[in-house]
Image (cartoon, rainbow, N blue to C red):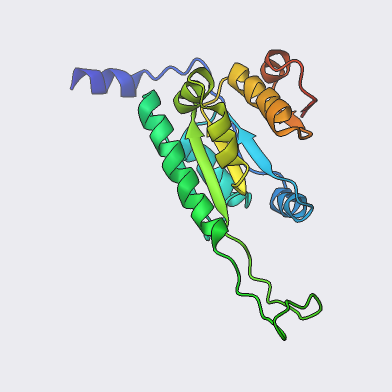
Length: 198
């Protein structure tokens, strides 16, 4: 009871900060346009997983129809097993072929084939799992899975992990990368990348 009286009778507030964390206008449309252009989007963030996943859904990086695989582990054997099982599951979905119509034993190229959207997958991992992947020799398996996913979301990633992942993707997959960061901490810690700081 004394604590209650003390805190309510003499409140002291040395300072307060309010931050509104919301998407800028046009972000979902921009992401949709990038996807339409065939660009795969990865998010490497220091945010908590729940926050990052919520933002990914709100900016349409992830869709409610996507199958989202979440891999969080602190053990190399478990990580390897989860990567293998997830990769097997994703491959199975890609191996399902559309039936092809034959005309006199040939498959004509001029007949329209109904375009059904392919399977859409998202991959979510945390910083501890990313550490295991990068230090445990599981990079190739991770990249093999990630390249089949529509979106990749690495949460609780350190600036060093972000840098390593970008360099790994560029080197192993031989693709162009663009990194966009919002802080100078990321900018200085991720040297060697093409960085646009907002």
